[in-house]
Figure 1 (cartoon, rainbow, N blue to C red):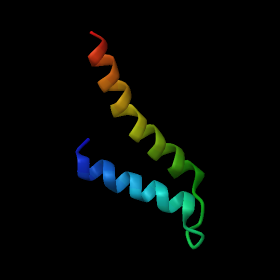
Figure 2 (tube, rainbow, N blue to C red):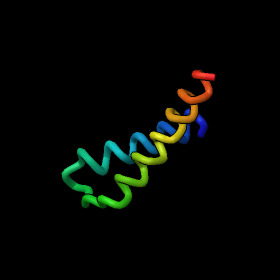
Figure 3 (cartoon, one colour):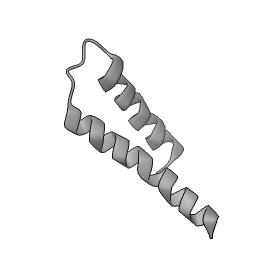
Length: 49
């Protein structure tokens, strides 16, 4: 995932969680959290080897 794509997803997640004008979409929040978690897990795994 590119830095710009990660930044876009983080901004969307922030908006979903913190903007009172935006309707909560729990499914989208969990999907974004999973997508943002995946690269960190992959990077950590490759550093251990």
